[in-house]
Length: 242
Image (cartoon, rainbow, N blue to C red):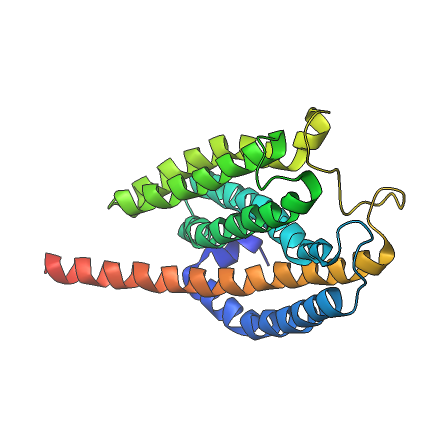
């Protein structure tokens, strides 16, 4: 069985009809306990008090914002090369989710930054590239809305994804590229000397898994909606031609 079979909208709808309830269940059993554990069962940080607990939303949201753009890039490349409509619609469906994740990361980052740095915002390399990524999300959605022909919109937004990927990578690796800057290094790391204490690390991993499954739930639901809307527009166009 080839993975490309699910580029067929009918097969995609059948598959996701079975997957969606499982994704929803996994999102609930990971995200809800993770947030409860993180916010109510972990101690306050010695220097920053309870404000440290914003990491249970900030870190997963920031990681998802970057990875969603990467997923959009891959889906757009599949569209540009193979011309599979499901991939273009999946990229379109992911964009509003990524926009919200980026906004959450920016807002919670400001909340976390004020007690750490004494300011709500700084033109730090990672923060600046993240803000630009947010603007790319806005531009991506605006481009889809501005072009009537869906294939042309998918082509142009695919090119935009290629350009915006530079800032997605900068958002992830800016701390490594530039030594200066206020933003801390990796919160999650395989190196036990770098990542946060286990009392915060384990619930954070659970929250991260929850955000991944939440994204999958929203992505499947929105992609299925985009497929239905495309079918509806095709039927309306056919009726007008008759």
